[in-house]
Image 1 (cartoon, rainbow, N blue to C red):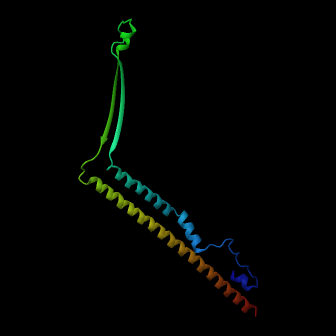
Image 2 (cartoon, helix red, strand yellow):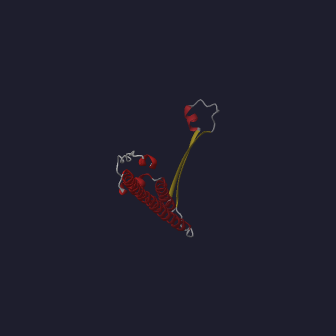
Image 3 (tube, rainbow, N blue to C red):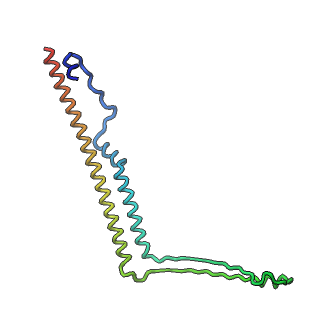
Length: 168
């Protein structure tokens, strides 16, 4: 490169980028597409579900069950009278409704809820950490690009000055 410049040939500067990105644009892209942030957001949503699941134990639960038994006790009896035949069929209906409520658990359920809430808070902190790391890396890369561009401009100016000195 320097040899071709010294021989009087001028190499054109690189083309300007087609789109200019501001720092805030880069940060917005990072917040939308960074995989660590997306995973942390999913983990936060999961932890919210764990809190709800832990709280659900405190509420009463209702279970229902219904059964129908239809039985013919004397199917093979030789009765010709249809009324007698119909009476030999027996229907049994059983309906069960069960309500359960925990009266005393020794603090197990409250502790499970507290643990779930702490895990949720931990996921919030992990999300904030992922956001901070991604933004830090984006800002660092952005300013590295600016520094590199200024170094390119400075070196180009140095080369132009050397070309002028050689041309004298």
